[in-house]
Length: 454
Image (cartoon, rainbow, N blue to C red):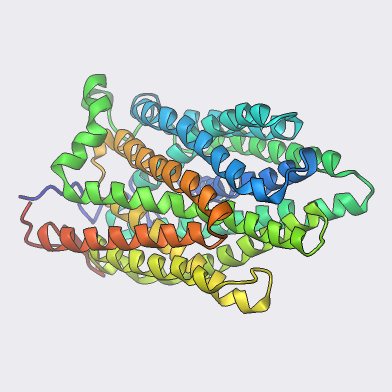
């Protein structure tokens, strides 16, 4: 039985932008603004790692032995809020549209950043983190849905890669500008650590507000489904997880999301924290140490960006499940490589952080491409919302346990945990590949259907 949900490959009236074929109705303006959204949304959300390190050290003067647990707990707060947001936003996306929710989400995320450095206690920090998380859930949920909405099937892998390239550029830009250079520059200009932290967060708020306006103006209006074709609200609410029961590849994509989204947060949270703690241990000022930690994150993100160009160039030629197997294997290797790192700020650690970046982006690419291909058109927002909820659950698990492993076992322990989870998903993907492989997009855009045994 064929449970695939992919539309016909050759779509009449679609435009081509760069190397990606888009569905009819998607303009070049929409494509350009999407590229900016991929750049800004992911770049700005990752600043929370640097911002947290700055606040914990500058505002609270927290001992380094306690920072791993607090950082992990703050990530848990983020994921609890996102769990509450993703499902609702996914259903609303299928009812009222993507761009409005996207714009509101970015503005709320910016407000969370603006409040963050004014926290006077960890309790205040938790409340402000929840505001940030609500905006984060709305904006990333809509970005993920647009990744599924815009491309023709023959270009899905390339479109995911295109978005991923701009994700990586955004992460590098935000990390370098707001994490590595601005904090030391403000300290050198005579600002104290707390004032410098507040200035940086205000700058990030302005970037979020500008992005919100641009999304509202430049992304596609309306819904991809005509009003008469929309599913009833009750059916939309249950459709996300019902789809996983009907289609084992969607279930596999959900398990991939559980690992892939925790990959990114573990990378951002604990790489920056590891570098910051190591720098403080060497006698650096907290702001300077945070910039060194951000530099490690930038190194891993740069490697991910280069590798994503390689993945995007050939993964549309292969079965999506086979691609996930390959990607999860790379992720298991990349995260496992962190076991050999003793001094994260040394030159000897560079190859391990390069492998880590390659593994993280591979996991994200494989899971995202699979759900993009399999999500049903009539309930796409709800299915992507469920996909994101699985990712939030994964982050909830990995960050809470990872923070405690960081403090009790060692800085490499959270990465070993994620490497193990990637290996488990790889084994599940092998089983699905045997039982329900799905289709193979070939070079010329034709769909080669494989025998399925669902």
